[in-house]
Amino acid sequence: MSNVNIKNNNYDKNYLIENERFLSRQISKIVSLDFDRSENIAFNDIANSFSKKNSGIKHIVNFCDNIYNLNLDYLLILTPSDLKISILACLDFVLGKQDFNEDKKIKFIFIDESESSSSIDEKIDYFFEKVRDNRVGLLFIDEIVKNEKLKKVGQNLIIKFNKFSSHFIVKKYLFYVGKRSLFSQNYENLNLLKENILFSSEDIHNDYNIFSENVLIFLALKGINISKLIDGYEIEVNKIFFKTSEMPKSLDLAVSLYEARNELFVEEDTQKIFFVAYDDFLINISKLFSIKYQKLLSKYRAFCDYLHFPRQIYSVGQIVLNGAKNIFMIYLTINNKIFDFQFSSNLNDNYGQDFENYTLNEMKRHSKDVFDNNFLSLNPNSKSIEINLENNKEQTLGELLAILYWSKIFYSMISSQKAF
Image 1 (cartoon, rainbow, N blue to C red):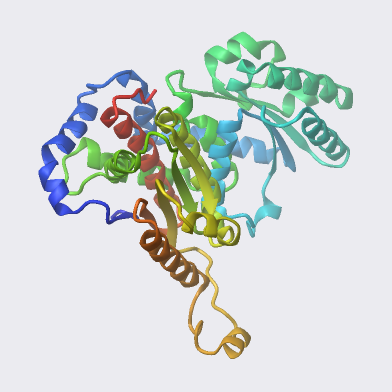
Image 2 (tube, rainbow, N blue to C red; image 1 turned 90 degrees about the vertical axis):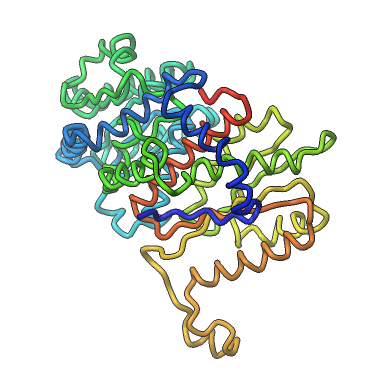
């Protein structure tokens, strides 16, 4: 059963009936690989292989066990910024900003190319202060070798690392995750321990890499059940590759974006598309959606970004409501979070019966409904849809990520663009 529901009032059943042949043709193109650069959907085969061969997941779990057996307190991670966002989006979705078991887990320190040199220096200084009293590890992601800035940071870190410990100890706490080809070209001279190396598939595409070792390793290290994540991914993908009565959610989202772009596009104005997180847990996943879609929509003078409501309603809500045009709002909401809270009796006493028996999730939903009603009534040239999530568990995250990836591919096909 699907845990993701797209609430869409922009087109009705008549639209689906009238365009059934067109929609079916898009699915057929996917199944038959009849689209440009279709060889890049190897990411789907890789994700499926994790579910069919438990050895892939066991390999990741064993790698994580090896790291934890070293009793590391901190792990310094050199990674491209887009990969960092993908990792944080997944971690925040399931664990939130305040993981109650954080003290029992290895703490991550990320360094990516988007940071200033001074910020990187501060992190490195902090890292080596921790070396004196804690066990720390250094992990390289393969793609950093393509960025000169990160490549130099990595070289300097190894030199500094050697000053603190013997060569054997240094090797013990150095790790590599990524493609074998990039390892052979750039890291083989480090003579890393075999158990500290985790190779990923050579065929993975960098824009579709969450279901690869490069991301899954970090989710597993934080205690996320990656097997259930893969299960969720397959729920959505099976709707595409195996005929079902239900329209794939990924195609639904792609069509919604395409129709909104056509209806709201005005040549002299920029269309604005916002992925709106209605929960702290969804901020980074909304950011991930906006980044991935910005690459496709920018050629149509469309600006894609993310917002955090209700927190940002006070700063940007009025701007959106007053005279806004050509705006497409995509709300992301959660029905039942792992943790939810009810307002205290003091609040009920102060504000009467207005909030009695309301949970925080219910309050957010009420806020979203009120805002959206005002938004649509005041701005007839704007539209909205809602991606509603039943919960924030791993399976739901897997479904949502499948919708992100495959909606991008569907949208590219419908709009005659390249998804890869």
